[in-house]
Image (cartoon, rainbow over all chains, first blue to last red; front, side, top):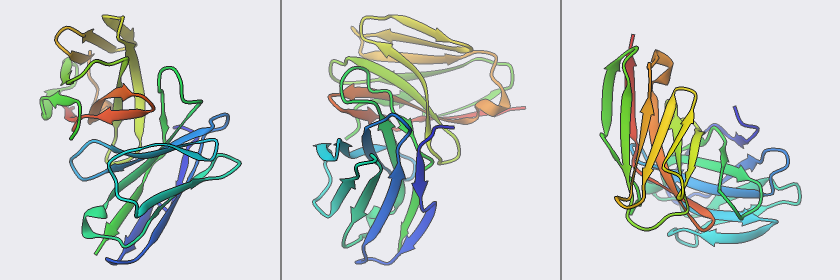
Length: 114
Length: 109
């Protein structure tokens, strides 16, 4: 198991609500990336945070936003939830942003939007 | 859309047999990685192969990379029931990984 933790494990929300997911990175890692994995699909890159700044974003609307804290933990916020937001949300930590991108994934948060 | 495409989508074998999964991608890459995912949980990094490497081994895993064909394969030898999982290839673009849809491997004991 990696040293990356995520909370909560499962979450059920209603369409239109807002949700915050949390991730603690592995010790020594200063970069956190967030991915969305729909059922039966591979993970899709949402965005990355490096030293508390957004460092790249995938094809996701602005209602997906994030934060990284001085201890390198991170939050993913999703506003105005839609049914299609139901997915497994994975965070991954890594060391720096250069070189081979070997990422260590957390166990994920399963979000269900009804 | 996803960069990598794994083939087959699903694979069912007997314990002790070898399992081969293939991955194709569309554009030039720096590195290609393989990950395993058990039961919709987090991904576990298996192996990374650089674009200037053709083959790499790690325990029972063997990965090949053919940049001229833009393809990679993952071979798991002497499979075990514990190898049952989804396997994904991921290509590296800048600071992000782009995953394929994965191959579901079932190893029957």
